[in-house]
Image (spheres, rainbow, N blue to C red):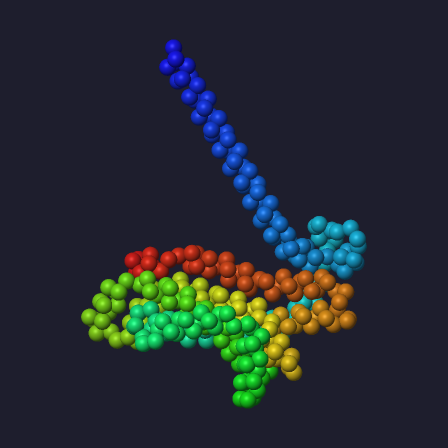
Length: 294
């Protein structure tokens, strides 16, 4: 009789445990949804405000949906900030290409070629990450002024690459260290030198690392404000959108056109969001799996 009662009570215990687990799962999911909603609310409000008129934004009661909205903010943003957006795209793309061109060979040498002084160089790269940006900006200003490249796209590309190269080297070296040496030894047996091995073996295997490093380099350059404000003082031709948006808000005639300001912010966020969406699977992928598959 005791055994029969235990057998009957066991399913109830299992059901009770499953119910508590389900409640715990729902509670965790609800908490996660609330946290994500709080984090995304500024983005939602930015998009919402970009479609509203200035009269709607000036009312005390907020409009949670852009009912009766307008596209005038986007028209103003494209007409007044379109050149700055194009300048940011050119500068960020140039900085990304330059960063990868410098960081990939350096990371390969540190990871696989056992270059003399490699540990010292890694320590220097780590220390460089701790240098305040304003210190680098002031130093670069003096250097670029001496070679007369201030107020140019080249100055901003070089400055942004200076910030991104050490970080990219650290990322690429971590990936390239995991490349099986058997691949490199097989390439050496086939008569491939260091340059050919790097170009035909290492780079294809490390494409996920290259995409990751390139994405961060692009985001660094796209969101840069300090170098743009320091090295681009007397021209509007190569003024990036971060500096253009700052001037746009600070101008007395545009301080009330918040829908245009928000529309500019939305448009400037699209390239970064698009790149993150496209590159997320490459960032998550491991270089070891790529080496085995290739």
